[in-house]
Amino acid sequence: MEDNSITIQLSDETFLQESNSLSDEAFLQAAYRTYLNREPDEFGKQSYCQYLGGDKKKRQHIIDAFRQSSEFKLLNKFDYSKYPQRLNLGCGFDIKLGYLNVDLHSDHNPDLVADIRCLNMLPSGFYEEIIAQDCLEHLPRAETQLTIKEWARLLKIGGILQLRTTSLIDLLELFKEEAYQTVELQEKLVQCLFGTQAYDGDWHFTGFTKILLTNYLEVAGLANMEFKLIDGWLFDVTAEKVG
Figure 1: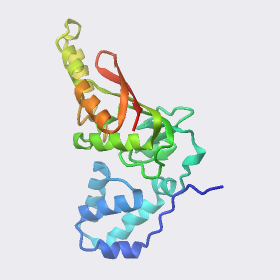
Figure 2: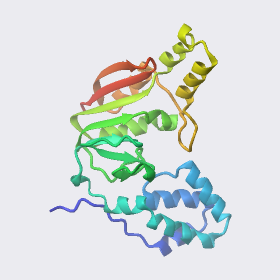
Figure 3: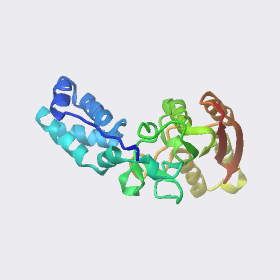
Figure 4: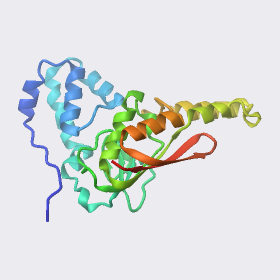
């Protein structure tokens, strides 16, 4: 049987030597990319920067923590061929049967802990379907196009991408509706726009219009789009990979 797992062979000593001149923040960015194959999350970066405090002797401790993490172990032992050819990206606690469930946070117990913006451990042109619900708005606006291209890379020709994300125009229109003219309901709409902000990462960096989202999908090689509106403010979009 073909071994589809990924093994990262690294010399910690070499990495520490090559990154010795870097600032703490630059070192952490390099370490995340090298050991975890992703960009650092803001909370993790801030916590580690505070721990390092300019003391380069502590950098080995950071690498040790990365190597001992479930994310590193899963990344380096992950065999995508053992999972269905359907992806549920940014799954949170919504673990779906019949899908490879992917999330950045290990406490959600996904099948794969990974940054959904960069899924190098997964093969191109392999997946029949990708679900990405309520996650695109959580990513920095400047990364929208690159992220959708990465998801399109994973799909087979004829594969389907299913998105659910914020419709800015429809959400803002709700603020004017007679049924929403109370403080409580308008606060709820503000939460829909900006996220709950109840924990790290649960805030929204962007939103979409049909014109913008159509453009992003087309540039990524997706077509045959269908737009539906859910709850008066959420786009539910399907698009097919055609090239």
